[in-house]
Image (cartoon, rainbow, N blue to C red; front, side, top):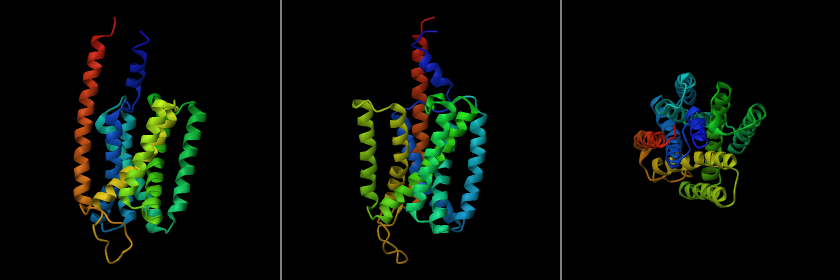
Length: 272
């Protein structure tokens, strides 16, 4: 086997998609849906965070079982799991904050510790945190656990900065987008470690997507029940959720078709 085809083979054996611009676009869309769809479902189920978490958690279990049973990256299965993880991560944080009165500062610290503990256990066990090596059930279990904690952490940290520290949704979007851009610049021009850059950006996409979702969905005028709430653009959780769900489907289809075309071109030029 030629050395030029080995990296492609390793990626094809991994059960996660290749990291590309499409990957990051879908990831931000998924995190936005996680914020708004969680609120929408909770409203439909009678504003019961416990019931909503149990329902969405059950769907997540089904999605992860399907994901673990696949032998390769299957776009539909993979991204459904990511969307549901985003929703459940949001609901876990909301349960702690609204249901059990856990301060956002404390939940942010707790989820940060759990996330880093997961990364630590993963590295000690497998000696790598690369997503291109997600090719065993054990590594996949570490991967999805880490993602769950990144979503929960991102929700807590995003709400802490936007709401408790009163930065607002618009400025929060600019803040997180700027930080991700800095990470990208450091990776490209300052030789920042690729795995570190990936996970740092991955964590930040959660509060970025949540801030975008809140900015679009929250009312233009705060309600009488919460006059201190941050203002949004008033699209509502239903409209915002389904716009972004449709966008996810479109981008996943485009990304999949593009990667298949590139793979077919690569196979045509592979030496025998």
